Length: 72
Image 1 (cartoon, one colour):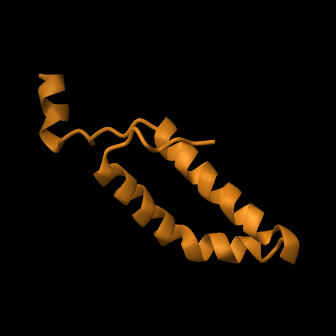
Image 2 (cartoon, one colour):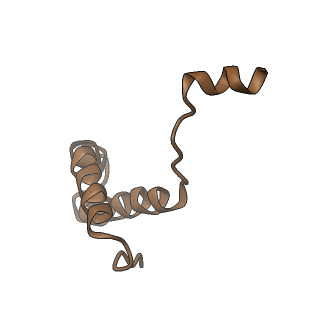
């Protein structure tokens, strides 16, 4: 089970927004499963999205001029 209590409120809002963004795709994918398993599949897909969000380390992209500073 994933515990999101340690996250800042803005982080949980970001995760909720992302899940809402993927909601139509999650529902579309769950239609491939039997009726009895759809709800479970939707929950599992949401959990996997959250797990990956928490695993990935997001960094800012380097600025354009950073490449030139590195060469000189």
